[in-house]
Image (cartoon, rainbow, N blue to C red; front, side, top):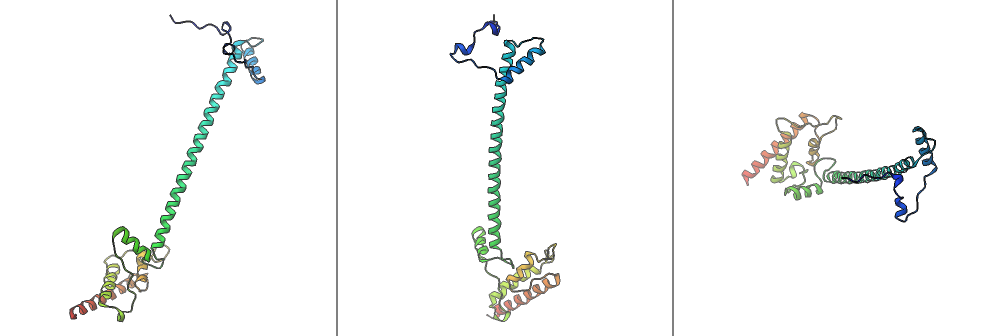
Length: 209
C-alpha cells in the first residue's frame, strides 16, 4: 500500500531538519494569509494559509524568471535578426555599387564592366567604335555595322524611353558607339540603316582585298 502523507502540522519543519534558518512571511504575505482565513470563516490564518501564501511567492518567482528568460531570448533573437538584416542590406548595397561602376551612366559598359564580363562569361568585349566613317578600318566598319543592325534593325524594338520619358539602357547604348541616342523608332531605324551601309562597305573592301 502506498504510504499516506502526514498532515503538514504533524511533520517537523524541513528547513530546521536541514539546519537552515526559518523564513518569515513579508507584511504583504501576512495580509494575504489573513484575507484567506477570513474568506474561510476563520479569525486567524492557520499553517495551511501561511503555506499557500509562501507557495505563491515561489511560483511567482519561477514565472518571473521564465518571463525574464523569455524576454532575454526575444531580445537576442531580435538583435540577431537586425544583424542579419544589416548584413543583407550592406551586401545588396555593395552589389548595386559594383553594378553601377560597371555600367556607364551615358550608355554601354565601363572598362571595369568589360573586365567583369571577361571574368564571369569569358567574353572579350571591346569599346564601341566612335570614329568617323572615313577613319574606320574595314574591321571597325564590320563591328559597328553589326552592332547597329543587331540593336536597332530588329523587327520589334525594345522600349527606347521609360515611363518618365528618359532613354532606356538599350537606347543609351548608341552613345557608346558615337551615335545620337534615339528616342523614336524612326531615329533607331536611321542608325540601323547606317549599319547596313557600313557592312556593305566592309564586304566591298573585303572583296577587293
